[in-house]
Picture 1 (cartoon, rainbow, N blue to C red):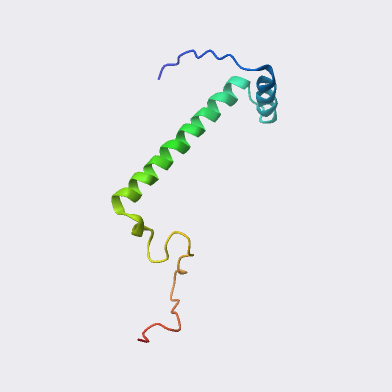
Picture 2: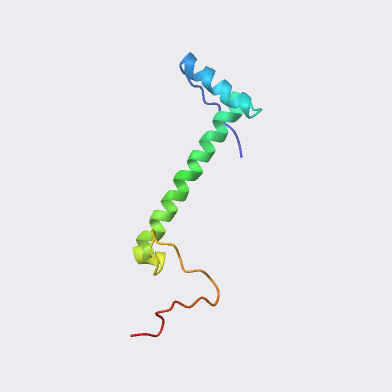
Length: 85
């Protein structure tokens, strides 16, 4: 995979903040910015994949517990009301 040069004009204050963040991680500003862009790109692609999966399977694909309720614990757990009509 090749590389290409990207030139940016940024504010001095922003560059100082980027230098500070990069230094805390022992990185160059260039490496810090590239790593941040890669992470952002991954997050965006992951969110798109999740959205497409939900559209394909529908919102009920989250299971009986739904997206906001905790799932049932695994194992031989039986609720007291099980089998009672």
